[in-house]
Length: 180
Image 1: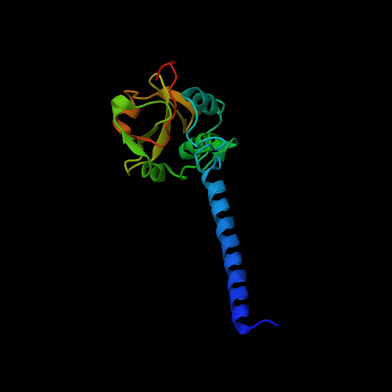
Image 2 (image 1 turned 90 degrees about the vertical axis):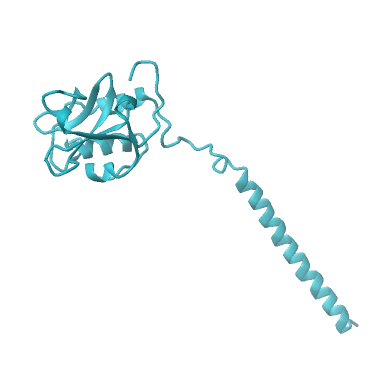
């Protein structure tokens, strides 16, 4: 016959064993999570893991697509729709408008601009109204009224120079030796 004191001893042992199992399971799960590839940073493709060549190839494939106010697809792009599409293709989601894009990223001095940096302009007299991607070699790629997606001189003396507001870096693009 089991005494009441024996029952409490057995009940305590059972509870203790259940708690030990839970603790052991939680410990094993913690170890697995801590040493999984995701936890140590080995993701399939880091969002900023691309080269200036990949950036250029991605942007240039849209060259010649017509300008369409509010456009975000290959049927037609506006400036921010084009920039957003290029970066989306590379795994980076950006805000929709040039003004919203200007609010993110790190400011870049003119002498430190690299391929992939965003260039912002005031073309309307009302603040940020145009965005382009620095392509390298003094060129920018952008969607502009009348020309669609095209390459232009970054500081064209007749138009873009006086309207330049600033540059922002939204991704760490790996530079390669083909120039900047």
